[in-house]
Amino acid sequence: MSRITQTLGFSVPPALVKQVERIAKAEQRTKSELFREMLRVYSRYREQRERDEYRWVANVIEEAKAEEVAKPMGGADLLRESARLMQLGKRQAKSLGIKADLKTANRIVHEGRKARRA
Image 1: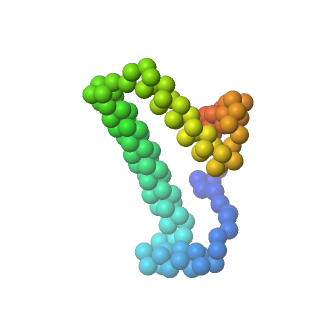
Image 2 (image 1 turned 180 degrees about the horizontal axis):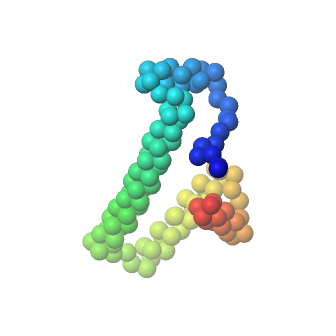
Image 3 (image 1 turned 135 degrees about the vertical axis):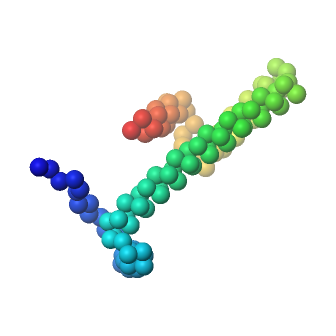
């Protein structure tokens, strides 16, 4: 018959060990129970953060659509905005030490997509 639990080993600073032990004692829990609860709370936090980020992006898109309806851009305006955004992207890439070439950009995009799938 296989075990229903597994032992997980990791190291933490001594001050954190004392804090975990103090909290576990105050709540009359084992360190394992406390760890499981921390993981459940963190998982809920991540899910909420992802929902909040999705809502934020959706709101930005809706605001942009409303702005486009209220004040549509002409061809010249679109070209100026595209050039402005390209310069902004180049400056940001330079500040992050990223080469602003197509090969590097494609590599970064593919790495990001691969990381999201994992």
